[in-house]
Every structure is written in C-alpha cells, then in structure tokens.
Image (cartoon, rainbow, N blue to C red; front, side, top):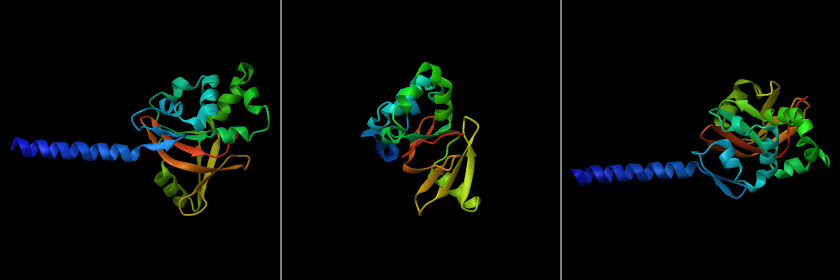
Length: 183
C-alpha cells in the first residue's frame, strides 16, 4: 500500500513538474519562469535590456515586482531602436521621468490577459476591444489572422504580439514589436 501511494505521488509530482515546464517560455534566449515576477524574468531577456533600463530609470521596478496582476506588452530592443535617433537616451534622463513613466505604464494593463482572454474580448466586441492601461489611456486589440492579435495605440500605430502568454507570478508578459505611444 505504501509503495502504491509513493508511486502515485511520484507520478503526480512528475506530471506537475512537466506542467510547470510546459508553461516556461523562452524570451530573449532565456527561460521565463512562471514562479518569478515580471521584473525578475525580464532582466534575464537579452531582447529586453532597453525596456529593463527604462523601467529602472522610471522607478517602476517595485511596482512591477508588486502583487499585480499586470499584463505587460513588452517592446523589444529592436522596437526601441526603431524610435527616432536619440529618443531613448532622452527619455531616460531624470528630467523626462514623467514622460518615460507615461509611456511605460501605457504598456501595462491591470489584470491577467492571456491570448484566450484577449481573443474572447475581441470576439465579444465584434472584432475589437479596448482596454484601459495603467496610465489611464486606451489600447485597442484586434485580430489579424487566426492566432495573431494586433495592438493599436491611440495615435493609430500598431504592434504585433510576437510572443504570447509568458506567465509570471504577478501577471503575464506579451512581447510586442513596436513601442506604443500615448497621446
């Protein structure tokens, strides 16, 4: 009897481990662990060094390490590099902290929005849905194909989500290919 319980518990443990591993997503060449928070995972991504530096400059580290939950639409280094020359260097200056904070919090939605939840909201909205960001402005989501959601900022600029459902202990990261800008 003890052996049977041990075997059952071992099988349960192994299947739980396999489940956790299946939720681990690679971003920027590194595993993003669902047991870690948004900041602890993001600092390991080689594709998000600019975002991490900006989050630090804006003083948002403690916020994004908080309980949340948050859904972060995380622009890649390439997305930041596509901004006009000098933009990022200018934004991380202490005197531009308010502007930087506004831009970064425009990429954050309170709550957990994975692909399924966004997809359901888009379908319920007749092809698009708008959600309020932490900075108070709206982002609009629509589909562009069967498994591709496009994010549109209030200026009409769009970003594709390139990596979905990167689960964190305090939310979800969705990797985007453009920096979204508030009004």
